[in-house]
Image 1 (tube, chains in turn yellow, blue):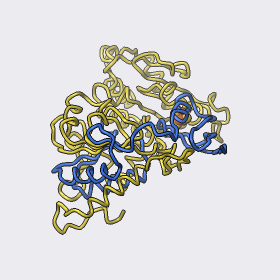
Image 2 (tube, chains in turn brown, yellow):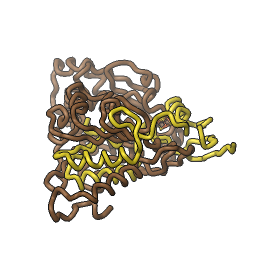
Image 3 (spheres, helix red, strand yellow):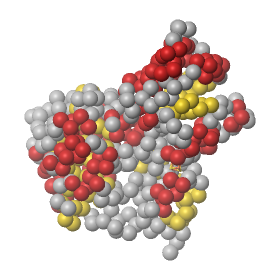
Image 4 (cartoon, chains in turn orange, purple):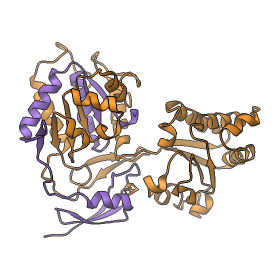
Length: 300
Length: 115
Ligand code: SF4
């Protein structure tokens, strides 16, 4: 089941390599043994691959998820509420009976769910639905991750700090509070006075006030290309592209680490080398916390 | 020029991180990326070992790498609330360095996930 994503165009091999086609011990006929449902606000190219397509009204994902959860528990849901989502009762009943009858369900959710009205609440509702389905059968949920190694960033931060993102070390130990320490909020409020950007281009993706703040403060960019952010940055350092010229490890979206095999020799240093050098410079300077033991850096 | 064939190369363009790609490369440029999808092919074939950009830029002007590194360290050290952000298109090894640096600086650390 795919919710708010368009894998046919954004993750082209997700169907063939992982989710729909592979034959296995329990699914010897591959695609024929699976039911594929797509929930989205419009018909994308992925619809062709699906058995069932539910076109939800834009911004009504949370309502639809909540209604599904209510129906699953056997609560009464009014026709008016169901109509609001742009779907009808028969379709939802059919979907739920298929979900309950399945042997192993997986919901992959994309940015169409997690970045539209409701945001975190939508993802939370979907995860709850998947959890509740486990009273009937085995069900899991997984976000469809975009750029290369974002999953790796989550894993590494979790491993090193205990939290996956939105972390502050300003008291000398890691604290987690998305909304307060997440980058867009920090930039829009103007809380930071220096930014180090690596393997990302907020200058192309973030809202205008955030970009304006990046341009105001000294920004340092590490990237294989001169990006939008590099143009407003104080310092840009060109690095070797990961997986093409830089060796290392990357995590797949299901958190399997995979080695990278660089195929070309880059004239540029890798990200790792550059940060190590910056850290070597920093070590020489007096620490902001007098005689503090590093919480984590000592382990690295 | 020697043609290298790399089996089981890993594509990091999207979250699928397919690790069954066969790359044909001469060390300068990748000529073929077997099994990769359209997006993956474009990603592999678009990079080369040529120098398209200067080593570093300071205020938009080409600069020496060593100068850029020491200026970066100075700016980060001088800041009251530095932010380390991104870490999508990079390796886990570099991410680990980022965490250590943010910790050392007492700053903020965040990735694309929070967006
Ligand atoms: S080959 Fe295609 S599907 Fe696989 S990681 Fe690369 S871009 Fe994604």
